[in-house]
View 1 (cartoon, rainbow, N blue to C red):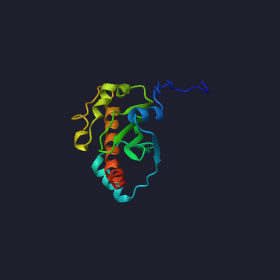
View 2 (tube, one colour):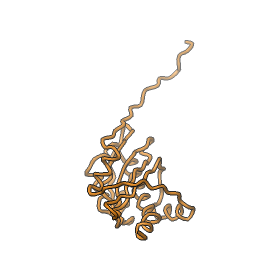
View 3 (cartoon, helix red, strand yellow):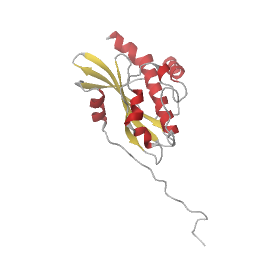
View 4 (cartoon, one colour):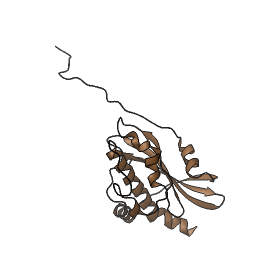
Length: 178
């Protein structure tokens, strides 16, 4: 038959999940903050090398946004919105790192895949809260895997490692100067 395809194309279900706005996530991470100031970073080759060495293998990132968090004249830390590849699509997540390098609980702002959405589970995300050392952010050791969401869980863990390495190499030295 002219005009018919020899195969069927089935739609792939995609779940675009988002329950918090960036503003809501900022205030959840830093309830006592009175300002969030966008930070623009340009990394040099040495900083990129150091971050890659500290963070370890990465699956790929999308757009990164950073804000310095203040209460009056006091820096409370930094707030990040990052994107990592889940299985095929980007997962947008947000997290705060306080002045000592301690993570808060990350929030999944957008999950766009049909499988693996268990990374939105608060109990799983709470594993990151209070961690402040890359040696305590090992997937499958410190951060538990989720059956059926292995790639999403692993890639979010890699992303959190990358953010902490970025904080260590670039942002922590700036915060100490202030």
